[in-house]
Image (cartoon, helix red, strand yellow):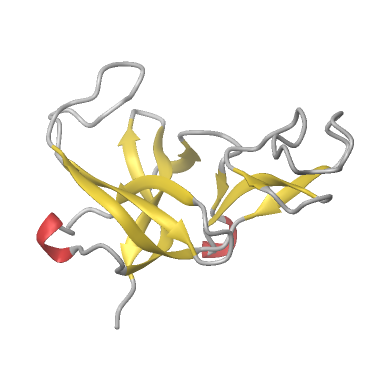
Length: 148
């Protein structure tokens, strides 16, 4: 029997109907995007919108970008991060999104090595299992190289 899948971080992404998308907010006044979601006020000093948060709306980020930087994580992060036992090294990539031109950090899908990656390589958003317990698989967004 397959375990239920639950987001490891509620409200930061969705994977409904197989479509993975990061969730954030955007200022309607100036268009500045925020990830994770900003609910207070636009922090863009050049924005003319009211500073009471009334201009912030929910926003779904683009799902493709290019690798800006990446690193091989060979150490087990300390709590509260939950990792598989035994620990498995993984790759983290900073990806500049196509539309928003902002950098979002995330793990790279398992099976990809640092030798498979390059700065500027196109990647797309997907979902993967961060860890599992007796009740569920806890999922996060991950980056997957786009086939040429």
